[in-house]
Amino acid sequence: MSDTGGARSGFQVVVLSGPSGSGKTTIVNRLLKRSQVPLLKSVSATTRPPRAAEVDTRDYYFLTRKEFERRQADGEFLESAEVFKSGNLYGTLKSEVDRARQRGTWAFLEIDVHGALEVMRQFPEAITIFLKTPSQEEYELRLRNRGTESETVIQRRLETAREELKFAGKYRYQVVNDDLDRAVTEICEILVSRRPV
Image 1 (cartoon, rainbow, N blue to C red):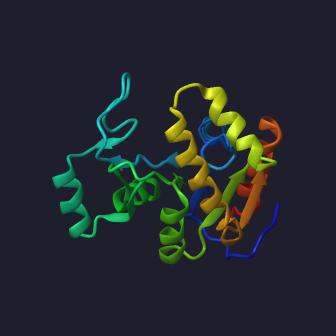
Image 2 (cartoon, rainbow, N blue to C red):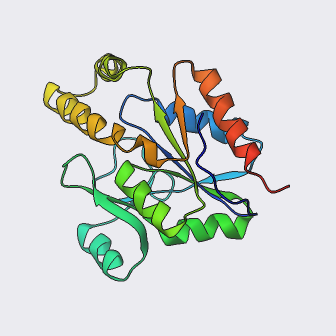
């Protein structure tokens, strides 16, 4: 765990990033249950169609490309980008941060590196955590064990992972997901340490 500083305040923006295969989704679900700090997970917006069992406004805000681009032009996004060269746009609406603040919770954003860099620019005191596996080989193993993606997608995600790892040092904290419970505990401890006294 490494910290590059940051002031304490009542409301916080928490950012978690990490390459595909780093275990973000599982970590996020456990954090939301275990964190002693109240967290409200930001719901991302996307132009991709819903998958089976996904619910609008719960899993994502599913927007048409026209609506997404209109909101971009109106400055409604905290960050937005095309992800994995998929042609689909993803982003975090500023209203999601406001929603957390109004509820008296911390805003919890699970976003990619480029989105995180934009959030860092707008919220310099954000608690930023980069999640990684012990080795590059572990990423590939986890991606292949999913059995859900084609070889082309796996190679594209591995290329993206290599690029994202170059930015790990920009985050306040880096957490290695070598053991799920240990990693969750470490992140919980980071959040508690940043609570105002």
